[in-house]
Length: 240
Ligand SMILES: N[C@@H](CCC(=O)N[C@@H](CS)C(=O)NCC(=O)O)C(=O)O
Image (cartoon, rainbow, N blue to C red; front, top):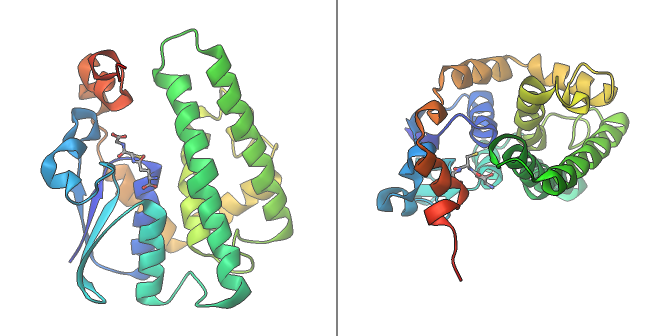
């Protein structure tokens, strides 16, 4: 059976969305990233970059396969079942460019913004403002795209939507009140809001959100040294 090394994060939810769409059986393998389990040699052997998600498929095209990076996993699964990514031509690149947009822009901008909004010591106003401004710009990019197409990849739901949706939904829930442009219901991005509704209407999305809601965050158990390790600070910081 497929195994998905997981934690309670948007990058993992992307893959759960896809597994539910595909109807593939899978087992979740929780990794407590706050306690540093991602740095254990056994896990680094699966992902040299020491992050979740990682997918292990015993029935890959050439036998067992291990894949890290959430959007690479989405592409693998799409090609495994022949859905959610056109096989060739212009339509394929429509999907791939928005998939990479998520991985290279929206994901990192959210990650940096979350760090300075939630975990950094006070007094980082420059960093917070820089990442907030970039995130706002990206919301404008998404709003324009969804004003011209029903889905990120064009006329059909694809892995590009599965990559973007968890970030938009989770940021709306967690930060929408403090930062209204992130709030799906604020009226700032009506096309994006309608797209979130369309995604949520899919039965597989509902199932994936249920699975995600059952996952347990271990953040509350993290010590200050655990936080320093994951954020590379204190005794874990680089010293020239
Ligand atoms: N680009 C990666 C990002 C993965 C990532 O940042 N994973 C986080 C959880 S969302 C993680 O494992 N963090 C642990 C750490 O940074 O040590 C992907 O899309 O898979």
